[in-house]
Image (cartoon, rainbow over all chains, first blue to last red; front, side):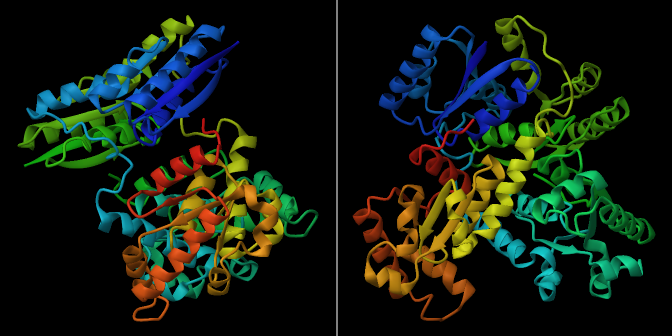
Length: 270
Length: 270
């Protein structure tokens, strides 16, 4: 039996979906079918959303859950009339904050994931461009500007992690792959030495690296398990010898890797 | 006067920060200083977090807010003892869900932004790699695999949007910049014609494009306001003539652009 879940928002729906998904992961063996209804920002759209939700309630064998972040009071009044298990995320928490601050909130739609501060916003876009220009050993001449430089063997997760940190936190993230010669030498490449304090190592289980590389270049020397183990061992020896902070990306999502790097590298997150 | 805000989590803190930031944007003229305390997953770390929070309460002139997503009951019990305005995100909503489903949740840490399903997870990484390989007109030979192809003039927001959609939704997103010759011709480039149904246009205000391009190549013909206006007009004419869906990225964040594209292109988001 499947249960139907609606994330309803007068903006992107990101907050409702983030919290809803977070809660639902706690119910492991239960199947949920999820649908986001974003930009429900007029009475007409709200009525339509209620019709959709109520139809699901009338036809579904399972439960119907609604996680809503509706800021406008009139739209909120319409949505809250829907059938199902209604979780009113915004109103549950806004009141205690208003009371503590002794002010009324603005109830303006679209502030959460909108563009509020252009300088800050452009900084994020600039960070993505910087990170792309310094991906995979490129842009070394711009390492002075880097907030952090990820290092490790080829295909250990540097690129997705770099882009995640740039997109979310506006960090300038470079990444540099150790080549075989550098790994055999066993010391930090000269080019990285001036940036020692910005370096952060990534590693991964040999079996997983073998799988990833094999998908990319099947049956190559590059993808062989023995080669992967050898490179990873050499990289980890460099991390330890040079006392670089590093983490194993094998059983971690991009979000977890990102959050861990932020703490260990002392980069403050808001 | 500044108010101190703590996002406390036994995992990444992403859910707590997303909801907390969303609520706080409703208090426009009030200053908040935010700090995420992630991976509070032992009693000792919880005690340390409480000490940090209580110290802020004792020394701060403003209010102290705590947005917590703590799943483990013992750690939750420690954190909930802290002073300040305590917002217990997890426990507020988990109970109504448990009641509706008539089951107890697993109370396991690290499920939300962790790696739960390796196939799904690798799909996201593959999507990032695909998107990088098809950035800025590259990888046209792989357009068959694209879920969506963003089109528009140079620097209108295609790359950050593509990467956002790939990282978050595991979508294979290509992007193709119209060159001047194509814009002057006024029709869809031949290379794109087989993929008509996958195309989605991005546009931007001429003033903003001028600003972005001028930062990249100061005082170039490319960056001139007149040139920007001309190119954008030609691009929009193509969108209209070819009946392509398109949006203006000027006053939208990456998250809003992403959510809008998902709806308009009929790409379902969970």
